[in-house]
Length: 116
Image (cartoon, rainbow, N blue to C red; front, side):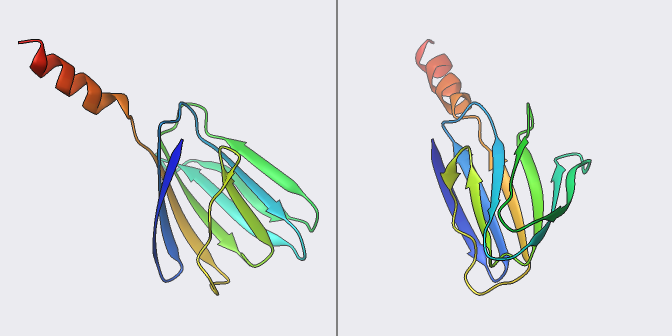
């Protein structure tokens, strides 16, 4: 699995490739944090306060993308499929976009053109 990160201010986009699932984990230590997670269609998957010492994992089962808002990001360790993903430095509130790319789509395109 590979994660490519692009950050501008307090907004980050994570592009995940070579993965067959998307699971987000928030580990909170040294404070509490409010977190909101929505799927590609805008439906809320989680919204609430995560207390100091708690861990919350959201399985995006079948979703290819999610949007996350983190209030008080300072005590949060953010993971995508159990791999730590860096959050923007010095931004208390953060907006994240996570996209799962279909790494097989380009393989299919090249194999069909070489089959001709």
